Image 1 (cartoon, rainbow, N blue to C red):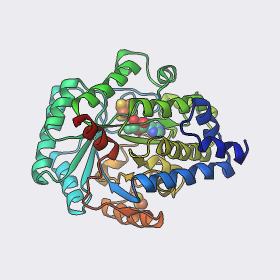
Image 2 (image 1 turned 45 degrees about the horizontal axis):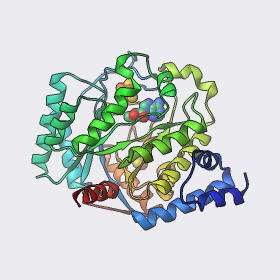
Image 3 (image 1 turned 30 degrees about the vertical axis):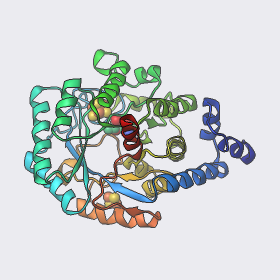
Image 4 (image 1 turned 60 degrees about the horizontal axis):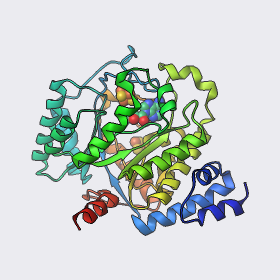
Length: 366
Ligand code: 5AD
Ligand code: SF4
Ligand code: FES
């Protein structure tokens, strides 16, 4: 594909699926054009501030058995843990004292009443300890509409639930075929979250076995059509204790998965100029400067890990995850330096809510 073709497509008002496929296949020279355009659009729409969301990996217990994930219930090698209330509150306090303004509580999918109530209690306690100052995002999987509403009422206001892939056939290939892992319920959960009032974030894994550029172009169109508020995407990284590992010979080299992920971030920024996009940890697994590179081509959110060190090795969704041995403080300093090097500033003490969401709410009021 020539530079000329890429330039012509980038100048269009809207991209067709075929356009997106051509852009996603851009080579080393051509992809810089995409990155430059995305960087410009980012600057004009969300500026150069990066918002911190302190990540608390609350528990690795999970009822599900996704074929790609290292903490799937079928992996007996993982030692299961849940953080104590005190540990969660300490992590929240760390975020507050270090001016992070927001946290993310993430865990495997659990549905028991005890779990649902426990999360509600923690939300109330975090709101109390921070006097409402900490913004709280949840990433706790598919739940009932009632649970989503209950957690919202307890103080959570953003929710991350990746669709993983917008192609139902591919979804079936990377999950067990049963009710617990249905594409339709995943989609319904996203609609329920939207209805409840959350800022909704979703995303996909990039470079999965069996995944094509057509699938990824479809993912971008899905994000736009669903009108998401936030996104988190990253390369798929194989884990030897998972069923998908047997297909590792089908994977593209890691560095290609990385650049494909960067192109996905950049194209999403072009398609949706005012949403929040995370520079994900999986990007850094492949390239030591992966997260900075994502910031430079469109991302504006980073999730420093606040999980106590003793639990980190048990929260390996994929192998070679970085920052397993670094204390929260170390990661914070490391990240600060990296962000400045990427030419960005940090939005200390700012929630940094999705502008896209705010605008939607405003226009609904009118
Ligand atoms: N590689 C990359 N990302 C993964 N996730 C789970 N397993 C992997 C993997 N092997 C992602 C999924 C999930 C999120 C919490 O982590 O997209 O939604
Ligand atoms: Fe559980 Fe999430 Fe891993 Fe699936 S991806 S097994 S739901 S922790
Ligand atoms: Fe964790 Fe650099 S971000 S050590």
